[in-house]
Amino acid sequence: MGMSGGLHLILVDSDLRRRARISHSLAGNQVHVEPFEDVSELIAHWPRDGLILAHDDGSIIGRLIEHMGRSGNWLPLVAFAEAPSTRQVVGAMQSGVLDYIDWPFDGDGLAQALEAAEERGRTLTNAKRREAMARSRIERLSTREREVLSGVASGLSNELIARQLGISPRTVEIHRANMLNKIEANHTSEAIRLAIEASLLG
Image (cartoon, rainbow, N blue to C red; front, side, top):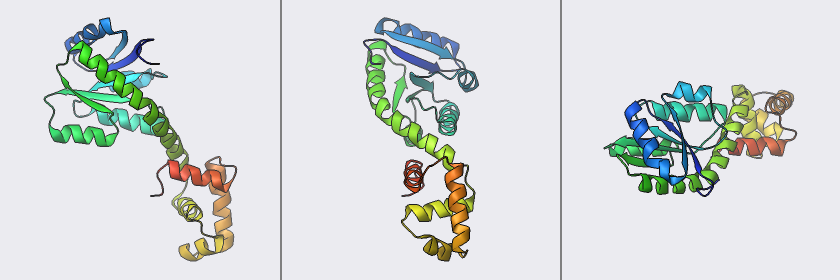
């Protein structure tokens, strides 16, 4: 997508004047800004692609990360705030934010930061998207089915899993069949890949 074809920027900020200033400062940088007042409005019209620039007001970032994790529709996310504390920045970065920018910012600097974030985001987004999709499939499993999947992914036989969980090998087989069915995996190796992508193991 790159800047040459223009960047699609999704701006989430409850402050109307700041939204207008940011849109205006980016106007000359081939950036198409789509402003949203709050997260609910954005979730209702979730875009297929683009980069999200969100004001870190204490709740917006958390809600965006939670929605993307749940839905599997992951978009690269850059946060900004006026004089953010180190704790605020670290917290946002740990939750999955790609970059953190101090407000106020100038259009050129911002455009460059967004371009860099978009590049990094493309790689990360695919991984995050896969992880979120895998997670949503793994979440369909009961605790017992998850334990069986964990045993399978660790290379244990049905007998060993049965012994570990204190159930019969036949029950393990039933759980295995249900588990594959629920996560729509055709074979065990696919189930293991999903478990790894969902960060179930590690």
